[in-house]
Every structure is written in structure tokens, then in C-alpha cells.
Amino acid sequence: MLLFLLLLFFVGVAGGLAWFLIAHDHGEKEPVGMLWLAVILGVAGGIAAAYLESWLIDSQALLPSSGTMTLLTATLIVGAIEEACKFIPLAVIIYHKRYFNEHTDGIIYFALAGLGFGLPENILYTVQYGAKTGLTRIVLTPLFHAAITGIVGFFLIKRKLDGKSWFGVIPILIIAMALHGLYDFGLSTNSAIFAALSVLITLALSAALFTFYVRATELDQDRGLSTVGHNAFCRSCGAANPKHHLYCTTCGKSA
Image (cartoon, rainbow, N blue to C red; front, side, top):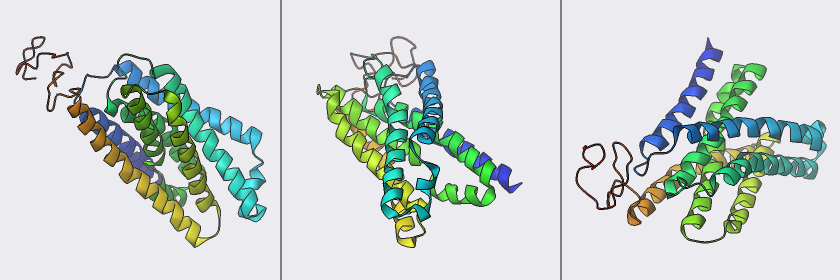
């Protein structure tokens, strides 16, 4: 029964975050198919990452007994692989799409990819290792993958809307990889101090996700890309409202 409740919790948290981000997007409505593709790419990224990790990293290197430097190196490689697998495929596909055009889009699409990556991982670990592991992951990982990838997505769309090269997001991605590696390192050691560092990282990233989402919403309002403020799009049907009418000329509802 506890195992079932844990799995239900993970699904509920993932669904709740997805609903929150999409429901509070006040700009042009996103294509439903592309939202699902982001999730699917996240799932595929998880499969690809598992394969690459098994190929590139000796499983013994991820044990505390391997030594501090060996363990740190291995977890940093894990962080690099997983962040690359979550971020790069979606970025390549979506960057030049017309509908990837609001600051909130960067967080929404890439957080969904993170959910697609993280939810199966949470379910598999809980089923494989039991309720105790599931309870631990409730504290540590429900939003971790979505948060860290969504934040990188914010910087990607910001560079696009600012007319700057996407190359500038690479340092942000590297920082995300390093944070991910340090997070895994803290959980893999037998040190309470490093474990506390992991908890701090995941809590900080989860809080930062919502902070960046609020900031993205403000930037969209400033640029007239939101139904809030400049009313550039209808909040009901998503149609463009370039003349900022009170009522939408497409669906007739209050814009």
C-alpha cells in the first residue's frame, strides 16, 4: 500500500507541476503535440543516459569505497551525461520554432523534459529498491530534474529573445552539469555533510524554478507577450491581439 501511495505521489507531483506551469502561461497557447514531445524526449533522454553511463562508467566507481576523487569524477560524468541528454535534443528541435517565443516557454518545455526524465527514474528506483528509497526520493528528487533543466531553458530562450547567440547558454549548461554531479556525489558518500549539501542543492533549485518562472512572466509582460499587462494574446483561445482589444476578435471572449 505504501509503495502504491509513493508512486501516486510522484505522478501527482509531476502532473501538478506540469499543470501549474502551463496554466499560468499567459501568452500564446503552446502546441499540445510539442508539449508531449518535450516529455517524450525527456523519457528518451533517460534511456540514452542510462546506456551511456553503463558504457562509460564502471559501476564500482560510484560506490563510496572507490575513493573520494574517483567517486567525484564518476558523479560529475553522470551529471554531464544526464543534463546533456535532457537538454540538447529538445534544444535542437525547438530553438528555431516560431512558438518558442516567450520567456515562460523556456521553462515550460524544458521542465517538461525534466519531468519526462525524472518521473520514470523515481518510479523505477522506488519499485526496485522499495518504499524506503521512495520516501527518500520524495524529499530529494520530485522536482530536481525539472528544476535544473527548466532553469537552463530559461537562459536559452532569453538569449534568443535578446537576439544573442545560443552559444552563451553553454556555460549555464556546464554549471547545471556540475551541480547535478555534486548532488549525486553528496548522495553517494557516507558523509552527512555532503548529504546535507545535496539536500540544499535540490531545495535551492526547486525554489529557483518558481523564482525564474515569476521573472519570465514579468519579462513577457514587459515585452507585450502576455495576456497580462499589454494583452497581446487572448487568454481564452490564445489568438494574437495586436491592437490590445478588450474582447478577442477571434473568439469574442474577454481578452
